[in-house]
Length: 274
Image (cartoon, rainbow, N blue to C red; front, side):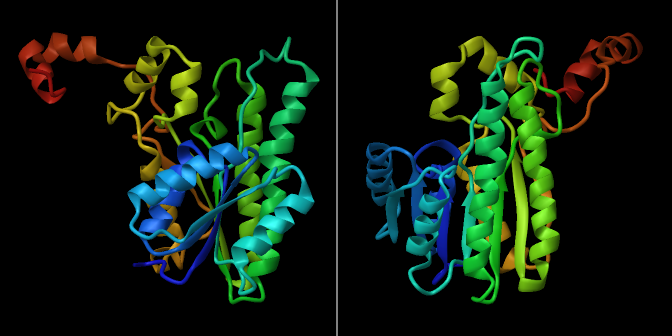
């Protein structure tokens, strides 16, 4: 129980990656408050977590991270009067749009939620942690924060900003023993992706992932546990790609040339083909 006795707040914890992070934190002994904007989604998530984790110390509270008073209230609840230990700043979203056509609303929405909202969470979590001996803050970015995702400029730009926010916070909060890191997931199999994208598009994401599959939300949670437990005590200001290799910079594919030189049998063998 690496996180026994630790108090954690997970934003956007009712679904997807946030749910997976909450699950792993609970499995490792933390007391977790999940927050989001919809009470019905949160209550359902608490029920699901109780069905997965034996006797979980989990509760929920409505919180819009773009409303500072609601963030303050969520941090106070999660801290329980004893100081917060872990923040997983997961809440975020995207807004598609070509640069030549995207409305101002697209940029404002992504930056307000992904950067300003996260900064507000970091601020108040750190105020709770700094008089409590420190803690761990993990922001959730995306491979889109470092790779161009065509027609998603507002989202990618805001995630790049989130990663710089993470590094700035890591430096400023280090004197208080507060570690701040980011996780940049690749294609994670979540409700939101399944509901909003075609099977062909999702298959394309798998094809662009060297490990050849989608990740699970709990696998992002595994990285959160590493960064939040004693295993991550010497780690701050880092961006971790939990992405099956999707973030690896790759150039041209010279398979055809190699087949000419080495033959199909050899190439099929080294590529793991029957």
